Image 1: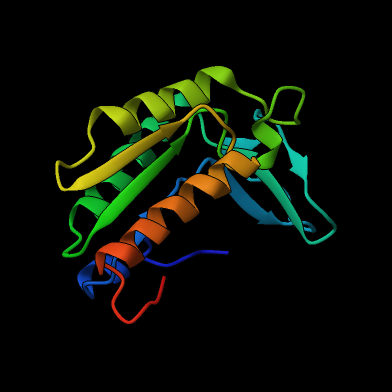
Image 2: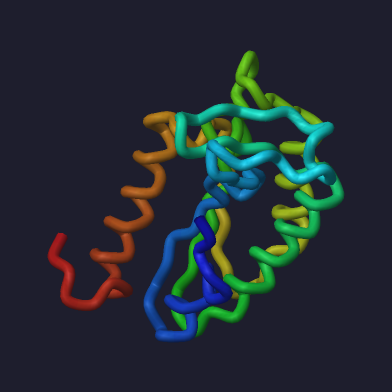
Length: 156
């Protein structure tokens, strides 16, 4: 379940415009039948289904992930727009969820906002990544890119 070393790099290097959101970047996925490694056993566990279980990164790890995401999207040679959903970045971090961690989410989002590359446009939403408002904002950005000709060959 690894997106590879070029995650958040390939599109930008290829000159492809990208709308980026930090979805599920706080998750560590394991096969459902595997034991959780000792270094992660003190963390909350979410049983997604029989095939996948997750645990979550701690505050310092989340800050590091935010820095790495910003570094990667900052390399882009094309239009890049980061949408920051202040209400959460994956379904289980909602209040009452298996892995609700307001401190961890706040650390991640704070670091993410603090060091965005000047070339990256940013929209902060007071919504969760799975809320309809998030989808509407992403589509609004895309529609504007189509109208502005940033997305070549697309028709409004």
